[in-house]
Image (cartoon, rainbow, N blue to C red; front, side, top):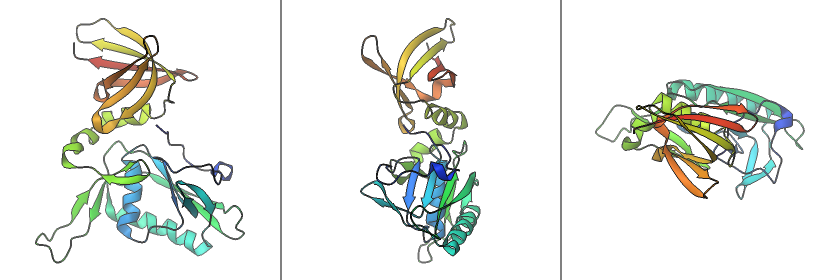
Length: 247
């Protein structure tokens, strides 16, 4: 699972040809045309792990094909339009910021990064009422980044994603590299902690699962995400998590 790291320096611009679109990176030649889609793209990152919208970067076959760049006016308008769209359409307003760089290989043009922080509170996007429908009020949808696209949460999924503690654990666990060593300390209400060494594999927030690998017997273990109490990096690439299980 990729972890989000904000793009703030020109030296951090991803290289052409090798960088792939992923859950925390969305490549866009131009800013989205409508207020809803601009707000939706930001909210989808906020409702997942955070991420960067990179404007002025063209996708080709799932990879960064080229830097096309934005004019100075386009870059200025993009920052203004995304700010206005998020303010007007998102509730609560997610945390995000802009970074602007000279466009590689395109003199006089610019690349704009919109860095979105993961939100512990689920972000909804206001959908304007359709005039010819019976219902005259506006509606709220909850987009979430899924792979390289934005999906929408269904009513049965909302309770899980609206729990701040679970959201926090999902975001923290996303920072654990795949196959990193993680010591999981399980505690029960009867007392008696047990520490087990695993290799970390992934988090499936929609299924409420953390997937771990047991190297000693080559088995996979699945633990409930909503029972994780904390996770932290005790030493370089040495992680610790505490889980409370019902036993």
